[in-house]
Length: 436
Figure 1 (cartoon, rainbow, N blue to C red):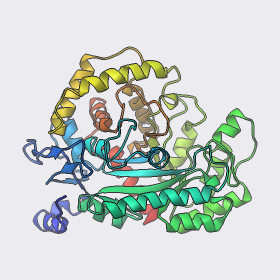
Figure 2: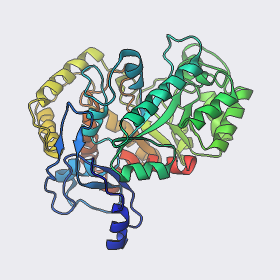
Figure 3: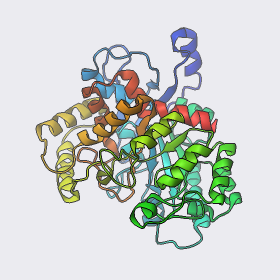
Figure 4: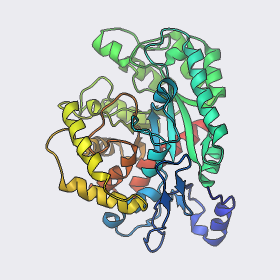
């Protein structure tokens, strides 16, 4: 991996207008800044260091591209792209998948992320239901795994804990990892364990998963099982301590009663790392319009989830998988040495083979539209939930497909600035504000 430690300084000296820009990872197959021509970068699907490139990305909100319809994919690979929820550690830890190689049985890995233009992945630190005890010990081992990966691949992978570390890693061209914990059961009712999570680098905590715990009642328990209550007294203390530590409070999976107590208690932005809109898909995991407004009022963030169940009430997983198989197989015919060109050809193939079955990505964009129309574009991001045992929408069959979201946003009339915010800028803002 090429390294340009002084690139930011050089750019600032040469182009004062870029003083406010944020810089991102070196990008595979990105377009030249001025001409739109291919950079000629290469991509190897069987390599543990899958990308070689010589172009640094920027997160500037300047109007860099004059024709977004033509340059949607170039914009995607130029922008900082962040996903705030992914469960890949489960297949890595439990089934021996390799984070750094193209695994046929996973929706994501480093090869797919790079091919999809992802720069920052927030890894879900999660305890599977099969484990009934020793949750804290289990998550310590998951964190060990990520730290071992960083030690083994120091030139290409960096775990970060604050915005300064994140920016430095992006500037040096590394793929960046952040950690977020899913389910407060893992701290086992101990404030000391919460503080240990923070000291190990975990920067958000989902207060519940589907099951309630010593912190709060979950959305599923409140809605499907009729459990009453919100935050416990310990839970209120947890919220306050997270504010003090600089740890983001994640309300995905949280019961609505507890949600409103968090909204009242927290003095920091609230996030929903992987949730959608209840008004378009009335599922207990989704957010009502009033909850969306409260998150926006806090200055927070909502990561759109790719799971069809949280997007489309009439979705059918069998139909979706059939369409995905067709799209994936059809796309395999295209050369991926130039990723912009690859995406143009893949998108053309998909458009020429549209299906009336399954759940279209257009429904996912409808959820983004709904939040934008309700509170504005500044609170929206991506929280895929890849490798969380989910069936995603037709066109997002794996993590190589993030660029299709950018293309769809362009078609819906989103500006370059809007798109950069959704792809990563909005989360960068909240991360810096809460975590430093």
